[in-house]
Image 1 (cartoon, one colour):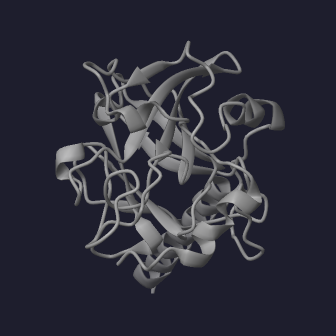
Image 2 (image 1 turned 180 degrees about the vertical axis):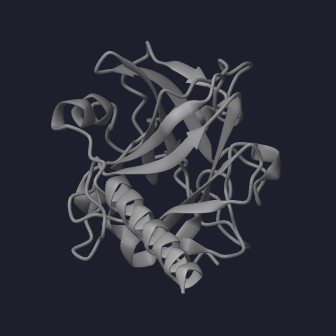
Length: 246
């Protein structure tokens, strides 16, 4: 009898803790002022990145060198035709889902049923010691295609993730942009999807993470607007004409 009571108490405690964690994670939200600091780099389609003072980082080198207490990632904006999903891994652990449907009624290409709020955050957990962060994008929620930080590992062998160091609100952040279309800029035929290579399809900011400065000369398309988002009418074609990515 006592054993059953204790078991029930433990289960109840774990359940309450899980609910509390989920509620806390879902309640994370950037202030308007901090969100605006990131969103100022959102430019029109195909324009050069505004803010040449930003340090470009190697997206495969992102880490918390001394661990992190409650790692946080925030949704800044999106200019995608796809309804993308974002995953994370720490220290090569199995991938976990952050957001399965990255769309918002207030994003560059608004979706009335988009579930996210601009500036909405997600807790990645707490870690001790050197902790490497890996992010990957599933275009249109594809179960077979992922785009990550290492170009050679991507399905088309191209860069699909760019990262920049940003100081916002007196804290260190990394601003990250993803490109969700397969193939070189403007290429069609085969699997190519007439990509614009603007890296604005999912835009997030990660608090406190650091990375190594990018070395060498990045592909020209990576120097386009990190978040070249364009006018609503100019980009609406992507909602209407982009094919399923899976």
